[in-house]
Image (tube, rainbow, N blue to C red):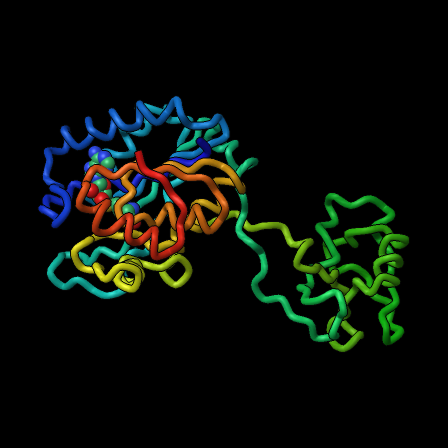
Length: 310
Ligand SMILES: C[S@@+](CC[C@H](N)C(=O)[O-])C[C@H]1O[C@@H](n2cnc3c(N)ncnc32)[C@H](O)[C@@H]1O
């Protein structure tokens, strides 16, 4: 299994329509510990486990993760903006949840995870038939340069241009001439400024995901309830669904096509929908038979997700 996403009861002290979320902290932590111990041997060596919690127990959750997986397995904690409206009943209006990410590889997991698409702000002012591009500097810090990187280039307007102070060109003059022949160099100020390299979408390196995920990018609890309402008409009785977009982001980062995803607290099935859309295999566990029959199954059917249940 390449990914386990756990969104357990947060120990909110509330009695929800479909499950009771009232335990002592110790009892809550013990239930989590037991689950993690079962999941750990099932996780691939390059897999990851994502534990989604709120303020109530996230600090205990992290300690239990350290205990079961080892502190070296910690990768990051993501802050997800779960709410944009204000709750004036509280000292501070809670806007975010925590998602703790652990992997047996620890920080080296960065070598196997997927980055985010780097496709923002492309343009095509010169109608390049190769499509949209973004320009990046053609000079680098001089300290690392060799003598073949210090020379003058002639701009389209006939001006001789040296690298900016303290910098040298990124390439030798031969390579620079080849890039010019390939139409890969963009000159600023209508040809009289500095040369920059045109990078096309397939050449842009994927981005490292940041640790703050805004609701504009991945949805929030309110948008998840609207999704649920549209699918099965039960947005209110199921308190904390997670948006499919959030799960899509997690699954895209942590897995590749055909990988296996586990959600042991399946709830409304957002993980299953996202996994299915992304051609990942998935399995889910949900303790509440009422949730399964009233919410999960109808929602998976409404979204055309193929599944079988024991
Ligand atoms: C916070 S909700 C999960 C929401 C889900 N991520 C979604 O997007 O709809 C927690 C779910 O875990 C279920 N649950 C509670 N205890 C469980 C257990 N021991 N095993 C499996 N599921 C459990 C609850 O019934 C509830 O549906």
